[in-house]
Image 1 (cartoon, protein in one colour):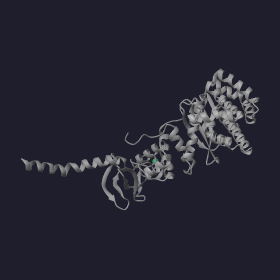
Image 2 (cartoon, protein in one colour):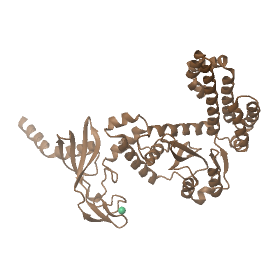
Image 3 (cartoon, protein in one colour):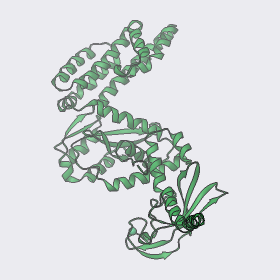
Length: 430
Ligand SMILES: [Zn+2]
């Protein structure tokens, strides 16, 4: 009986495992729909290299539109695509990359089911990189994925382009915010458009002028422009004139985020003045206290640590005008927190207080705010939540710092879209 059992298992080893192992390997490599021709370990590259080819139904398709097309030539021969590591070993897929002649796109490299067009990485590799970018630090992404940060910029641009083609992010917009964001140390600008109802970024473009903003409304089209009810923005004239031309029916209001930012700036001016005076008079202990209080003054009181709360309390005794300036900033924030008629009432009281406070930056601010009072009251009537606007704005500004080093505005736009536009792909296989 025993020899028969041995014969049986030997035949199983010879026939079935090859097919079964190939299917296991296809799953490990993420090329289930393709043909696995062979596997080797490339000693020089220290990597697993898998020879693959697309299944018959996926062959000779245009890399840009996937239309089946006539073969043109063999292109540049065999190519490699970086895949996700197997354990700690890098993986490459290797295949022929012939060219086809698409009736729409002309001579193009054929599509492969495991990678996006024009990429040296597999789709799974790119999706995982994009997922990580929105959740961890630059250096962690680069080290874990073994790619340069500039390469990451190209990866996320491809991921976002693909996701954008699949969804219409401009549909259903009712209340939007338009903002300009500076990057590259304030030398360059982006216009960003956020959806107030969903708290997400819907559009971004390089520039800060009428022509750049017009591109958004052109993309939106007349029917969707007509459905916009509210547009919030900073006080820039060029924004108002473009909005008037494309959406005369929409109510334009002043973004609460910017009004509060003006107050924060005024407060910082006061702090610097007080600090300089203290130093000039040789009050070094007071100067040191004030310098340490900088972040405590900026922060919203609900986010203060206990130590920072102590700093604010000590300012009350150290310098009375600075403490009043702090209260003025907080009172202005309260205006938008309360909104509606109560907000308007607090705004009226705030203006009276600020005009007479004898702290110059706030007297100037009171004048600016008086000039924009109608727009601010519209904001309060419409109950635009400052919390949402502020959080999206703060996140975008943070991303411009993370994106430093991408060398292209498109990569920065892709990063913000990925993180705040709801377009981040799930992790491969989840
Ligand atoms: Zn094509």
